[in-house]
Length: 130
Image (cartoon, helix red, strand yellow):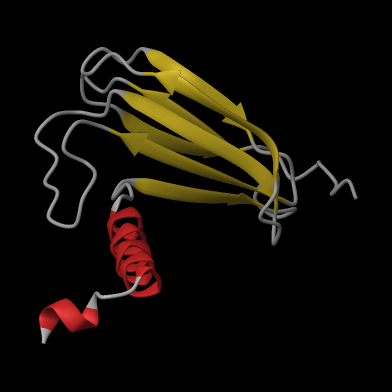
């Protein structure tokens, strides 16, 4: 019965495509944070080392924009992933709130030691730029 199921090339391609989609859907980071900057709360995000207090990266999020920060480390990918080590890199994406397309994005390397994020709010004097 099983050989008949995979007897034609179309069936084999469909099974391989389904397998590939399942594997790539599971390959996602579990440490993603999203920050939104509004007129009431203009936001700044800082990534720092909590043991030393050293700032590794800072971003002032423009009003009306959203920042996504994704920390990636060894053991962070897969359906049964358990991170045993701190993140070694960070991807970030700044986009207008409600839009998928980034205005800015980048990837930075991290030292491989624990990091934390700190959120601060700037004065409300900023106005939203269209």
